[in-house]
Image 1 (cartoon, rainbow, N blue to C red):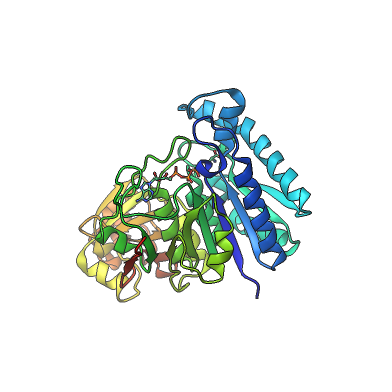
Image 2: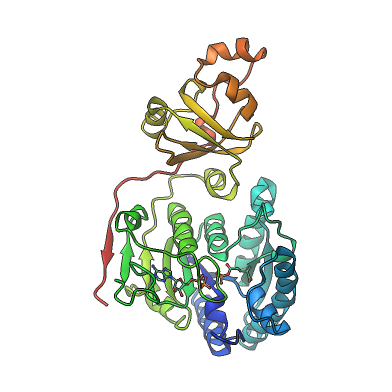
Length: 381
Ligand SMILES: Nc1ncnc2c1ncn2[C@@H]1O[C@H](COP(=O)(O)OP(=O)(O)O)[C@@H](O)[C@H]1O
Ligand SMILES: N[C@@H](CCC(=O)OP(=O)(O)O)C(=O)O
């Protein structure tokens, strides 16, 4: 079966440093590369940033807007310009494209999420390259992706892509920001994300002048994508032809190995597309039961609750060290859980005065976020 790749391009690659004008030769290179990949039979999705950066350049603004309303207005100006440029270039090469604007809310609602899956499948079947961005103009502060690294990982997970390429203005991940630390060490292969913490890799969240998130959001994206079985690569936007070399096995950029796809699509949706509204802290027995025994969470194993949530909301399950070990859909509200935490299931009807669910989070609605074994290799140069 043909492989599917998702390519995310950051503002820092699409615009010229300093004046913020479009980096036309880079964009043309990206368009040529993606069109060649399509012609070779790959399914290709492009996730592009740049609406805000291009909008700023069009309006003569000298820095990224700080208020939500201004950012949304500027994105509305830039998105049209950006698509116009892509469409002109792709059309020159006879490659059809489609604009897909996604808001966080679309990914939270299961029906919209499933619908988006169907739309992507049809576009790919038609040989179209979907060009995706966050629908910045209608996003609300509490419910937005905020950065396209995360969006691209969620899209890659949704369509069960084989590869996710994060194109940026550095050639790979380093042990620290190479702009601040000149002797930072390049990292070529990451077999498990947790190793980055163990090696104390610094991933400043400042980003470049127009970019958002820096490396932090790329690591988060790699975590989401690799746990969904998607091999993820951080590489340079200026050299998109490297994508083809990487697909042929060259060790360019920083490559994050895909983890086995153990969770089904619904569980991946629970783990990363939903926005958790509360935290449930577990005692050690409950942590073991969930992590090693594959059990559901019972009220007896709950020590503390944080947040205000309703039945069916997504919640974080944390151990006594406040480490999030799992996420799940909860069967009780936070008010009810305050009353029944620490109690046996058979006591619940007496405490609440009505029959409730046997479990607080059923194992079918529970996704583990911890994995085993880690290794990172540093390359020479
Ligand atoms: N450990 C690191 N390795 C490489 N780059 C880093 C690291 N930490 C921070 N950075 C910075 O992240 C920047 C890329 O992030 P960003 O500007 O958000 O890119 P994009 O617009 O492509 O999403 C780089 O220019 C680099 O200065
Ligand atoms: N949706 C925003 C993208 C924000 C973003 O993630 O930017 P970047 O860090 O450059 O990938 C835009 O189009 O400007």
